[in-house]
Image (cartoon, rainbow, N blue to C red):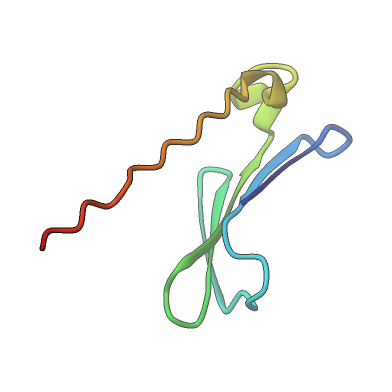
Length: 74
């Protein structure tokens, strides 16, 4: 996953799938969701992000990675 913020255009983008083309997009109140051909969410883009969150949205970033170990039953 890649998170990008463009301060010049005030756009915050979360990219989940980087290597597949976007075939459809849905925009609702300045939030754009891009989809792959199999309807997976490829990215979520927030327009005017600094106006909708804080001046520098990346200051909100608090990355935590949680992985659970799979338990194998014999």
